[in-house]
Image 1 (cartoon, rainbow, N blue to C red):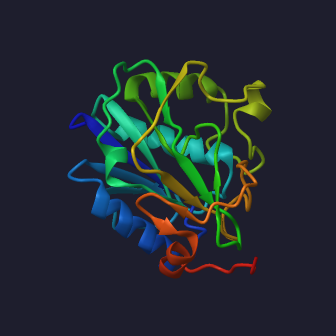
Image 2: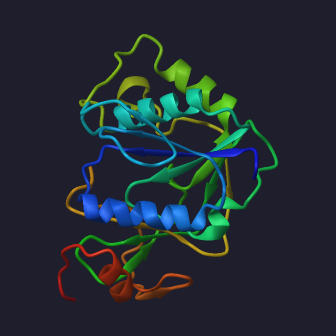
Length: 222
């Protein structure tokens, strides 16, 4: 994993105190991997590239990823997002190939306004590792002829190319401990697909109630 760079991308729409705690967890668990952060506002996180207030959308997210991949020098890049908590073992898995997108399937969602988790049944871009040059080749092709920024295309590349995903070759693995996405009223989407079964405690992170005390956001009582 020493040939891997963390790429952190954020529209900085989350509450500053909330995102600061997300970043603190990232720094605590990522070891000595280099970080490139591409953000709308200045941040003290690795090598920070500020793109300005270009608006939150799937299109702009992937444009930020593209910028980060161009700046990185390592063989692999591993994703980190502004509403996600990553355990230490997320940063230690080594991919066998550099031309495949590897997605972690040990994912949970701290559901919006509820003290419970939902299990995601599929992988996601917020928990993946991929060969940097391969990632760039795919993104460069998808963005060919496109404007620099767009707030209209929330589900890029689906709106532009009819693709459900940015890659066709995806393989899955599982970390020992889960990655947790925390849905808030400030994220681009308040909800994400996950099991409706209520899960109150998960490995490493403990109970949803305990986690929400550390990362306070509004909730409904069950």
